[in-house]
Length: 227
Image (cartoon, rainbow, N blue to C red):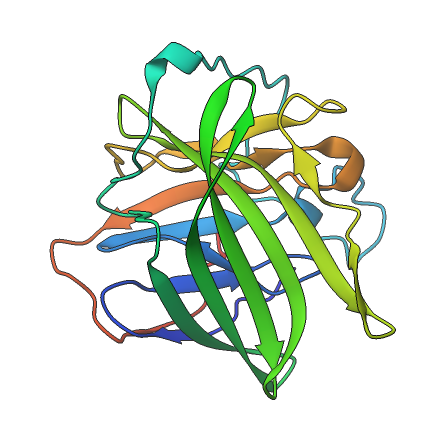
């Protein structure tokens, strides 16, 4: 089972980290508790005793999201995941007993994917002050307030150089399809795919378990990856 990593974030957001290859700071925003299912937990082959068992809410079957460029807006202002260019966030967490930090910067750069204007976010994971991973994530928001994840250029540090990771993907290329990071009007019980790129194992899903009435500030969040 993928580990849940305790994350203590500065206000006004809190994040939990999941992932099978890299420590990833996955946004869940203010007042939301999401259970995240990394790709490794979706394996259908349960022949090995150590194979993770997917929770009951996992989505199966075909996935065919419909995205219309005319239904997208230029600004990402979802209350749970606003991405204003020039904004930076600093988060801290622990992986395998070692403290790591994540610096996320909303750049002024844009990238067009499937005809949709996407905001480019630079995400750098560091350990002991040295960068280990760098990701350029591409997000876009539709008129309903849903923030779509359109792909990522993931780079891992190897032999002193950043190289492209195998789970990098772009919607519309090599079977990759966009997913939703945060819905515009989330409700408890919601289940949705956040990314879909089978060749690279990028198959994360999210399950909204609770929506809080209060704004969480500086809270310690752990063990959020659960049934």
